[in-house]
Image 1: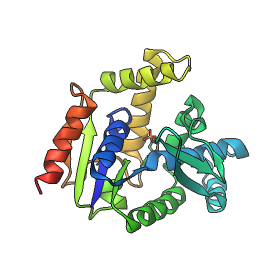
Image 2: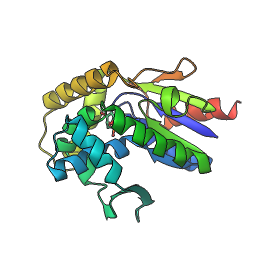
Image 3: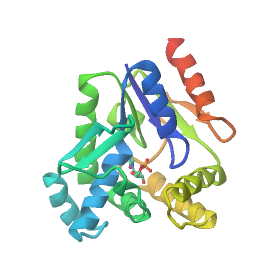
Image 4: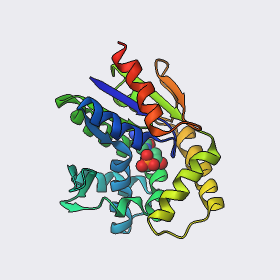
Length: 219
Ligand code: DC
């Protein structure tokens, strides 16, 4: 069973996909974390987030791996070093939507993502899983929510992590990311024709998980 969960930033994909994977005993794969790891590597190497040639060279040399941290969260390793927290900084968030536009980066990560899905059942979350990475996934869901609600969720997360970002900043950032994600030439964010679209604005993660489980178990 391969379940694709796509949607814009802050729609609740990660929380829902993690819970769903747990309930169904499937592997959870966060593809955004892979793009974030490339963005972090670019920043560390002093490479511009928009320099296609340098990024193409960089991506061939990277080793991105997933593991599990002690508290059961997905841990991300870049060249053997754990970077699970570092990939969530505002600097990486700003860089990643540029990096994700680069065709070579997308080709490389898409291949890796398909390999991860080949071995076992997965709940894979991202922007292009149902459309590009796993177009023949058994179940596809596209989560959305209003810009204000998505910004509010991200604001609470960044405040909890100790970053000094205002709600107004977060609204601007969400609108910026939406623009990049939906308007890029390669694999833009859009629901697959056979995806079930769920508006999560007024729903708790558990309610969304139950809605998805009803679809998955209903056949
Ligand atoms: O889900 P996230 O916010 O961690 O994703 C980070 C960025 O990566 C986001 O700006 C879009 C990009 N991304 C993508 O283009 N394709 C994916 N499958 C996953 C993420």
